[in-house]
Image (cartoon, rainbow, N blue to C red; front, side, top):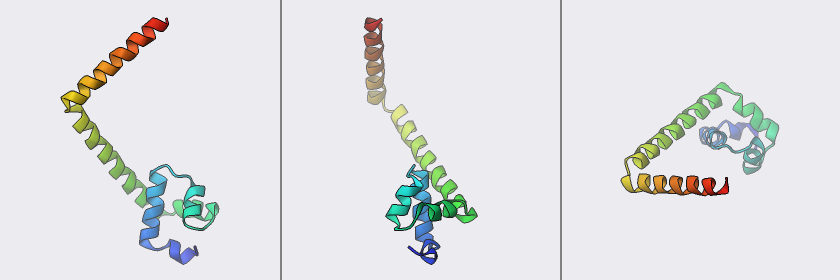
Amino acid sequence: MNRSRLDLPHIKLLIAQRVAGGYSQREIAKELNTSQPVICRMVKRNDVIELINEVEDQLIGKVTEVFKIIKNDPKFMADLQAGFVKHMLNMGRRL
């Protein structure tokens, strides 16, 4: 992929999403048919850094929402507590 295609907004967003999602630069480069050093230069650009930060903030917001939902689910919390108690009992038996 040539440099001008990497400057397209949807490609920069894809790079930001992959970086925020934990993909390696090598994986991103392979997906975009370019090299890892090119991706490295892209993720150092201010406009891409801003996109990465926005995507990370969105992910953190979604995770926070999910935790709130889980926390307010009595069945899930009961199952979690039962699993924790079982785990602790198993650990006690091993000692």
